[in-house]
Length: 264
View 1 (cartoon, rainbow, N blue to C red):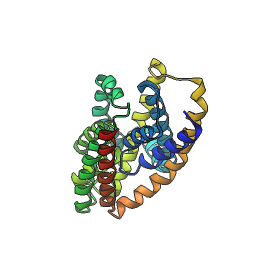
View 2 (view 1 turned 90 degrees about the horizontal axis):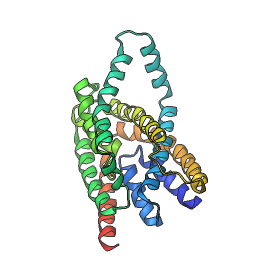
View 3 (view 1 turned 135 degrees about the vertical axis):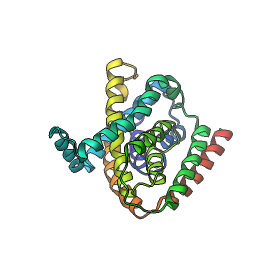
View 4 (view 1 turned 90 degrees about the vertical axis):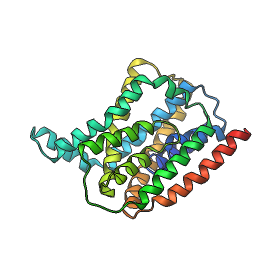
């Protein structure tokens, strides 16, 4: 992988992980456009590394919230932080099940099928449009809401379905406060990404080549820095109910991807 390609893909991941336009879908489109010839396992390694970078940027942006949650847990009492952590765990269950039992099938979808990505982007657009029309509330995320949002996160493991778009939209459609929905969406993915990365490293499932180490490292930095910007920006956009613009964007990119896939 060329250095410039790694930088471009890193920036794409950093921006699109938090913006509701599907980071995995844009990575697959980027790889296809840049002519990435890596086998699915190597392609997945780069995707996992970039997702790890954006998970770290999430920790930086929400560091105060995370420290508060950890402090609440260490108090060993039933408090707001303990309940929030419980909801995070509940939200992880669907994605963990899908990851354990359908990992091989998911890996095959990260091989440059841009037509599939295009159709999934259209689904993301529909979700965002409905969410933008939902009324603003001050309702927090409940335990039952957390599980439903977790199902949306599991479905968003498909390239082209935006994880943040699907989880925030689902949360808002359930009647939750938009700012709280965005906060929950960004924090709920951190344990999953760290767990997935640890599992792959221990099992040796990821294919690593030393000749790509520099490109992967630079891609990691590009994703981390751009992720810091995008995470902060997305929180502001959700408060202002600007998701329709992203719905239109997903429709345009989705149609381009479908056309590109059929004519490739």
